[in-house]
Image (tube, rainbow, N blue to C red; front, side):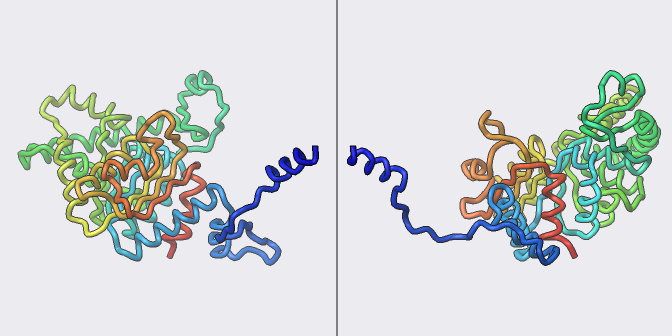
Length: 327
C-alpha cells in the first residue's frame, strides 16, 4: 500500500525542469493609469493579451525598418468606428498599400453623405426590413443612405465613362477608387486621404456590394463601360516585388488576406505579418490559417516576425495603433 501511495505522490508531484521566462502578472491599478505601462503589461498577462503585445512589437519593428506596409481590412471595419482609425493611418501616411472589399469602399463614401447609427444585435430582421433599415451587427443603416449613394454614384460613374472614352482605355478599380476619393472631397473619408497622399487602394471584389448594384444598373444603360481588374493585379504584385521589405497587417480575413499574401509570394514572402481576426484553422480555410501556414506557401518568410491575435478587431486594433502608430 505504501508503495502505491508513493507512486501516486510521484505522479502528482512530478519533478519539474528549470524554467526561465516572463512572470505572469497583470496591471497594477493602485497608482492610477500610466497608458504606456498599461499596454506593455499585456505582454505578461498571458493568452491573447500577450499576442496583442507581440502584435504591437511587430508593428513597431515594421516602422523602424521602414517597410512597405500592406494593410488589409474587411468591410465591417468601415461599418464600425474603426473607419476613423484607418483614416488616421492613411491621412498620416503610416501605411503604404490598402486592400479592402466593396463594402470597405462604398460605406466610407456613404458615411460622408450620412452617418450610420448604433443599433442592437438582437433587433428583429423582419421588423427592420419593414422599416427599411439594414443591420450590420449592432450597426443600423437606413435605406435612405443607399438612395443618397445611388444619386452620387450615377453622377460619378457617368464621369468615369467619359474619362474612359476620352483616354480611350479601361480604368482599373484602384484608379476608380482614387477618382472616388477625389470626387467625395471630404476629410472624413479614407479614400480622400488615399487620393491626397497617393496611396493605392486595391479592391479585387469591387462589384460585390452596393457598388456592384450601381454598376449593374449603369452597365445596362451604358454597354461600353468596363473595369480592368487585371491591371491592378500587375500593380499590386509589382509593388511587392520592388519593395525592399514588406509588412502585412490584416483586420479580418478572406479575400483581403489572400490578395495581400499572394502578392508577397512574388517576392518570396513578407518580412513581417500581424493578423487580427476570429477565424479558426480547423476547417482548412485560408481565413483561419495562422501566419505559419503562409510560410509553407512562400507568402511569409521563415525568419519573419509574425503573430496572430484571435479576437474582435474593433477592440484590439485601436490598442495596436495606440501602441505602435500614435503620434
